[in-house]
Length: 194
Image (cartoon, rainbow, N blue to C red; front, side, top):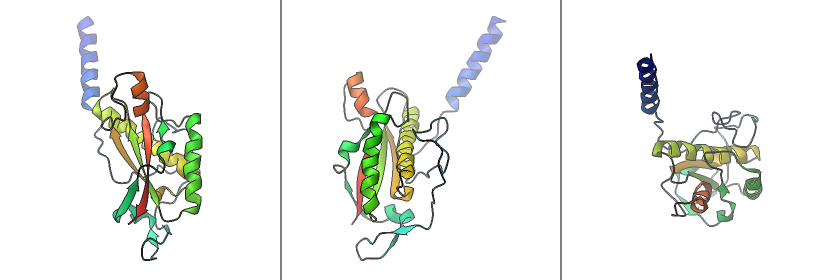
């Protein structure tokens, strides 16, 4: 009987390990409409569906309106300093926007109420703990939580590209909570057309 239970647990463990996440970051992660990422509300409840196609806005360069769904297919400049103070920090193993971080996202959304031509890249990051696959998935959920939160504040989600870096881009290199808390973050990069 003991051998049968040990065998069952072993088979279950192997099945769980072999079914790991096969995530590869994509250029634009679709916003989940009225659904938050599975198992995580991202700090916001279900809202109304957000349009994803055919939205035009802005007049970059030559004054020709662009399709916001295509904004990242054109040359652009990245400004990592503009929203550096609005970096969103997360709790361990969480992708929920903390109430202490909400005002940062409100500042970003307020800026975009008058800006119609620019966009954002939200980069999801994790601390060094956990597997690469787990951290890539968690980084994606963090970036999506920020994107969904901004969309619920009225920002067009087609102007927000999400990227996950997992644990590959730490800002602090220590092996303690002080460093890990700085690495569990969502960086917001300001994008302007060239």
